[in-house]
Length: 235
Image 1 (tube, rainbow, N blue to C red):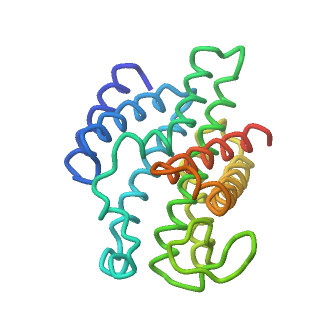
Image 2: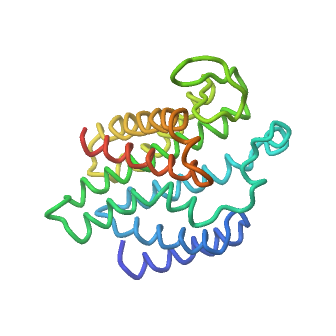
Image 3: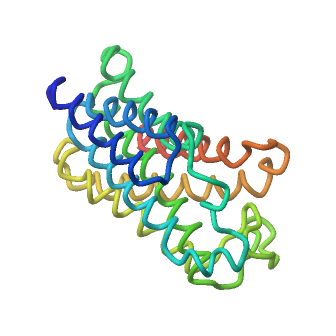
């Protein structure tokens, strides 16, 4: 994407974020900057992956609001999302793109795009698993001990949530597969990276998140993104 188009599209998305009332002013600005960064990638895959993640995330968070409120797990009750949420979910993906853009000898731009895709697939899987898993119900179990826990417990998983997480990773992979080098195996690569990143998020949630304080959830999301991107790069 040309620099001019990247600026125009990122500003337009930032305005859209702000008008949606789902993010704060800082969230809209950071979202716009992230969109611009992903538009600098070697191909359009990361940008479309980012746009897909944002749309799916906003829709999934708002869907079934009444039921989620009754369960005490409605994310939007905490207020619109700020720059912290945006950077936690997409910061590492954007970092991969920037390294590939400014230091191609250190990280090949096409590989950087794939790693950004793996990162986005992971956080999208986590978001879909959490939001839709809560809505669809099931018996939440601790990912490590497999003991039944209450809904909303950090590190808890359900079969409906796991399947929705798989779908989230697949949707990101589908949005990027024809744009990340044109290789058909990239779909499976991104899918695997997303699933492993989502699993890592659950493990981090069950082990270290309770000790990370106020922004523990955001820190775990960032680690989920890092794992997803790293797995994509290793594969």
